[in-house]
Length: 232
Image (tube, rainbow, N blue to C red; front, side, top):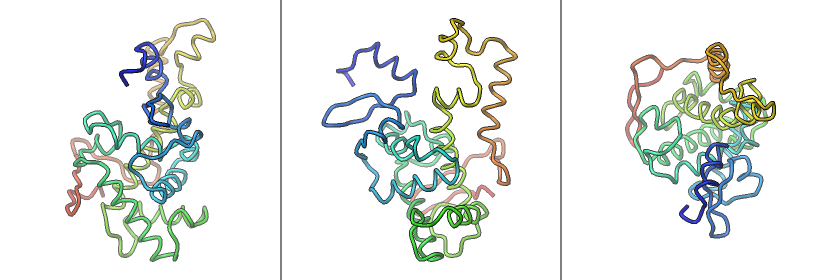
């Protein structure tokens, strides 16, 4: 990171870029760019990344191409207090890799028991049915963090990687520095009214139809071998 010019780093951070290692050098890329360029994973195994991509795409269309596996893998490699993962917000006990590995393992084991194949090998309809059962905590023999909790955490990560970028904000109609600059107008947002409508769009993007919502003043902690309160 010390080899990067401060100006380039600030510009990259503004665009949602993250530090990835490729060819022994550290470069700034978005998760989408990292996936497109085939940046190697630091912590995730190929099979784990496949499951995460399939799950993310089922939860939020576009998550696979947006680089959800690269995003999570990169965030697992930074200090826990700097992570942008939903697991940190919900007070999952670090290292967060333990949670994600346990969640992925539980998904694949349950899928193998139910369908005879890993989750990433299921067709689209089967994946949706599986996720719906996981959301409702109705998968037989589930072994891992509570299914509904896994659903919420990974869906939130998928929403972040798809919509938490310049492209994502623009797709929601939220003014950004980039779109404003094209119009020669500096607005982010341009008024209290636009700020209110922008916030509403983000809330709609992260809304969870037909599923539980996080109760106020409630947090959960999960670590290997121990679960806290079930989200539902």
